[in-house]
Length: 131
Length: 236
Image (cartoon, rainbow over all chains, first blue to last red; front, side):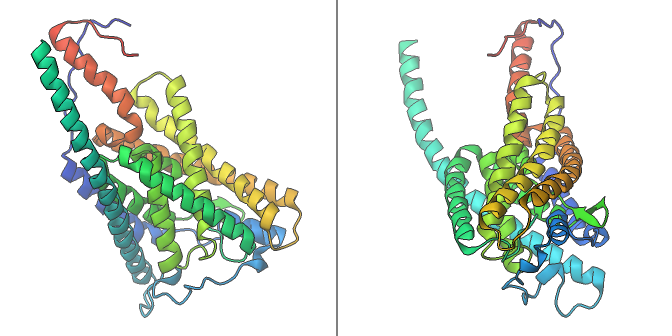
């Protein structure tokens, strides 16, 4: 395929910061709003366990007395608010943990990249000398 | 598909725990290569979105529901190793804070929703990306198919674990049929959500979609050569 028309550089439609902010708002709306409309039917595994007869072997979670157990905030009576709070708290915790983990992993990677850059620089110097 | 405590016996739970630890260990090393400055905040956001989306059970008929597992979605957005880290964080927070999924079952859940779903989702995606025309518009459909396949395969792997370490005497054929059947339906929902989310991110910031990068690199090269000469350099 030899095209003759140069493809124009597609302009970036949103800045990175705007993208991240939008993604975060959407995520909070899903956790705090859309989740209210979630189906309360058992999920696939639970349904199959009930249907085939091994649901009884499930134990209660040791964290069943967590203040956010079953995506409900203890002490908050309003169903929507209770679920929304638990959802938003969960989102915040996951965001911090996963983001922090990624930052920690990335920094080490970046250090390695710095080393690699050093090697590249020296090779560039050699190339320049040769050229 | 969050496995509660008690479905699987202790040896099986320990074994999946070992598999999960090994998988996360590998992912920590592998993610280093995937994570540049751009991808690091994406990992946090993708994990948070998967957590949020997993709260939204959608009905799949006959009194059953399903929700996004997110393995394929995360893998296409941030890369497979980082996706394993995303899913592991989500499952830990769900198990410890929300009492969703057991505690002795955390290894099982990370194995199924983290390792298996990510590996299958990413594997199918990469296969399709190689076969389909190399255009960015193929990324979302390929991700959707990866998502579609990942859910029943994870269900099948659960059935395998149940065959080895199930605590209740239940006909395995019935469990396998029901698990794969229901999770194929849930997989359709997984595919729709994954396709829509990947397409949205692609439309806004294609450079933030890990699975689209090889295709974008081609396009970038095209632009550079086109400014000098009207011919394109074929990329191996």
